[in-house]
Image (cartoon, rainbow, N blue to C red):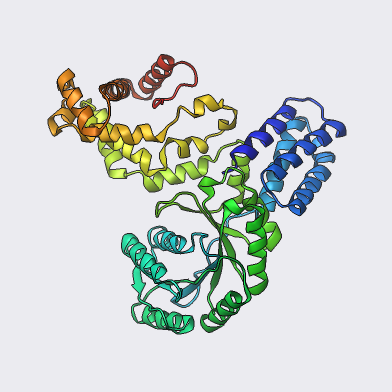
Amino acid sequence: MFESLSQRLSTTVQRLRGRGRLTEANISEAMREVRVALLEADVALPVVQALIQRIKVRAVGQEVMKSLTPGQALIKVVRDELTTLMGSTANELNLNVPAPAVILMAGLQGAGKTTTVGKLAKLLKERRKKKVMVVSCDVYRPAAIAQLQTLADQVGVIFHPSVVGESPEAIARGAIDAARKQFVDVVLVDTAGRLTVDEAMMDEIKALHAAIDPVETLFVVDSMTGQDAAQTARAFADALPLTGVVLTKTDGDARGGAALSVRYVTGRPIKFIGTAEKMDGLDVFHPDRVASRILDMGDVLSLVEEVERKVDQEKAAKLAEKVVKGKKFDLNDMRDQLEQMVNMGGLTSLLDKLPGMGQVPQHLKDKVNDKDITRSIAIINSMTKKERKFPATLNGSRRARIARGSGTTPADVNKVMKQFQQMEKMMSKLGGGGLKGMMRGMKGMMGARGPGGFPFGG
């Protein structure tokens, strides 16, 4: 998300960073470019006008013009105003109520509502240690009920059955009664969607809301609809006492207009964003971190949290112990590292959170291909246990067999073995010379590929 906006904004603002003195003229010129960039990102016009005005007032005041480093002061102002626009701080769910806490999910058909219920159930179970029940009140689509049951089984939460023909209110009340008996902490109520906002839909969800009085009412909206997302959110906010918004499909949205518009247009905070199709692809929305990413400052905090959450600590500890004791790094270890990378969303997701990625030329970014990681894993899986343990045994005929077994070519197998040798060299230096040894190894690897090279080129 935000790729095109980030590139435009960071370039515009960075040009002013090194200037010893800023004038109203060059600030106005920069603001014109920022305005165009925001409109191209499909940010709603009233939002753009309000944001530019706020930045301008602060930029030509004492805070920036009288600063010793006006360019850097301006970047701080832009970051602060973007953060304020999106809600200043992360908004947690309010679960501090007598159990079960009921959360009602609303939204149009196709926004990813049912999938989001599954993702949120997983997040609450794993990160907040809650006992969760899910229930579908979509009495029009049996497939939606079946889908939610499948997701509940997948993430390991309780599914309360419902059937077509029952009233949504009766289904929801039945689920809440069952949740009390089973000492459930949170009940997530999925609702029927429509292709457009219509009166019948609004009347139905209002009646459901009145019947169960949820502590949270979340509006789920597809971020790829841009300005329409903000307008649809406003229609729901007018009809229901929404407590927050969930933006879905942000991994497919290069513009990011919805994220910048929804809070301003509805007055409701964005609480979560869907970052991938997998069940762990839902994150708490942090306005300050998103603002940093838009300005190409990276999001190292989210990266650290992701590593802590998704890296298998036991495997990491075993590898560290192995390296320290000077034991041989083998292809099983390499496969573990590649699988950990896939679990964290792949190289693309990791690099996206690093500062300065907006300045990396596109042709180098294009070389970072997550398909290469999954292909490397397939190649290693096609080896025998002995071959993975003793890579030196991999002669030409064995490599040809592995290529056939993994649906790749001998050249692909050779590339994986070359990467393995580089990783093995780095690990042996780490074992022998500590951190300095690893840095020397990494420097050697980078040198072999040239400046800006990546280990998994296409």
